[in-house]
Length: 312
Image (cartoon, rainbow, N blue to C red; front, side):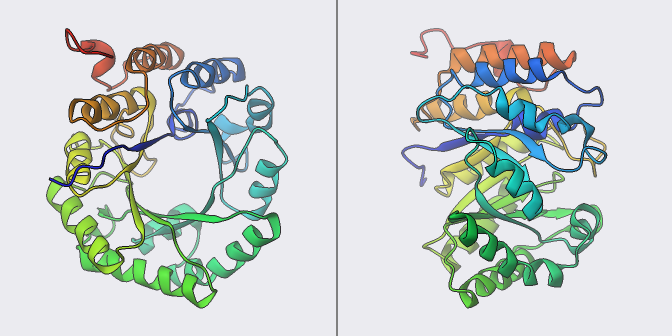
């Protein structure tokens, strides 16, 4: 076992979770959930997405959401952006502290569908992103490697295939004089299992020991929490998650979203890994999220509750 002493949980529910909801959620309700999450001890929340409203109507109110945020010491509000115009919009709000991130996919068919780019174009575009970050005084923080474990078009991806894409990205960054702090490996469409998580994470750590590994895991086929555990065994200390299990992927039929933040936090705490999260407050937030979307969410802890005698 190589469990980390503590983990950073990054909450993606208000952005990725709500994005999959067919009915547009009122801005007031979004802010209500974000406010509840801000009181849980979580240190990072992705609150909205600066994308075209005709493409993602759910986030047409991105500017209003950002204006309604209440700043909390120690808490970072993030927002998704896919181009420099989106980054400029994010930077126009003092409550938002944008991440310096670059989105890539290990599956080129997925990249074409999701970003309308070839892999070659995406890697070539890394230079433009670095220039934009430099212009705005933003540090490169991570690369998000979508479909790191496979997708419907390519099938399961062996670790060597994903590592080959990682190498091209890292080499391109190096050519531009940039070092990568974190590679986030994303199971975008639910192709990962504990063995493939262990294989890919360990292979990446062996190849690039100075680069942190993060995991962005979905529970599309029910392996989400097992994959979290596999990551923890490898010493992974950064996980993206979603309150109540909100979310999903537009390229799968599953209604399951990201692994539930409160369930991941509970697992970590039971293993003696610190999260800094108040589990009771997170359970309340998960129940609120369920009320807002008007349907049962897949998270387990909000229904089962804490163990008797649990200090949280």
